[in-house]
Length: 190
Image (cartoon, rainbow, N blue to C red):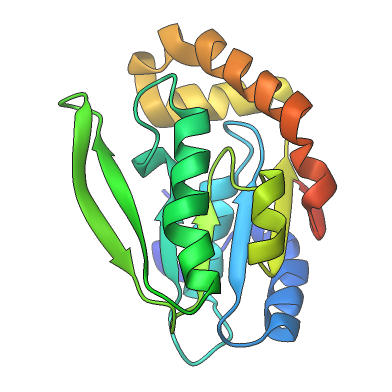
């Protein structure tokens, strides 16, 4: 069993280094977006970034997995994050996002995000083209397809298996439409 106090795995540290360098260059109140296909390592990278954040304030971490309104919710989550979170925050106003309760299959509470704190948004859809102008550091992370699927199914269990293809179709449409890798300031392979 890994020791949780031992710090990030060496491969995560290698991936984290260029991200930390860009965060420092962007300033203490940076907005960081982390995107890539399911199972690529976005959540792990985001967790390590929060743990090693170089600024005086710990960043707010928003996970798109908490926002998607169901298995067909990729585009709706992108719209919500843009209009309700990133644009207001960019204007110096509080942003907000609404949690989706996966167990109940319905929208849940709204969460306020203060503009004075740094922000990390991670998940499929974070690098939509409209988000480029309202963010500072944009990370694209990818991994081998077989590895990604195994990671995703290990993480989400059998509940996710019947939805893998459904999600992949949405993902492919998003990639064609938005060309998210194009907006990245950092390209990583896990």
